[in-house]
Image 1: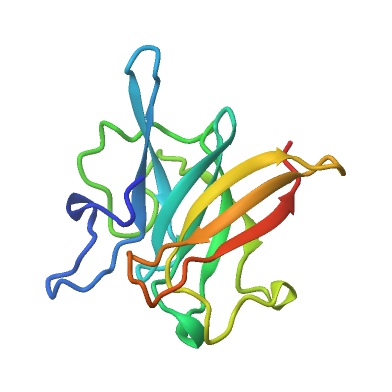
Image 2 (image 1 turned 180 degrees about the vertical axis):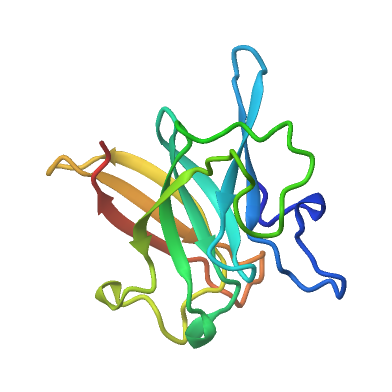
Length: 171
């Protein structure tokens, strides 16, 4: 999955301003090399997508986020994405900037973890701009699984890398 829309999919307007929300999610079958593409629709052209984490056949976690640090950051969401009923769009040369083309079913997105939720006490002046990593860890004693969510410091020594841990339930 690309971080943002491709140029042929209406990523930018004539002033090179980000306007697109339609991303392509590429599936490659390891055994055969066969590919399919699916439509993922972001919540805003200001957002980007980072990291896919496998949950089960056809189901993944995806990070969708704005690129703003600290108190300017307003959108850092992890979605559960289901591609099982989505249309293969690999034969569509160009997607519209927004909206769903006729006869296309996009992936299903369900909010999974809103990192800006006050219940987690993460948002604030020190919250990183780039939440970019996901890893599902071992099963915990209560039957849930460990989910690690990481930030990217772009190798800047004065910028911390953060690791957040959540107990999640995976079906």
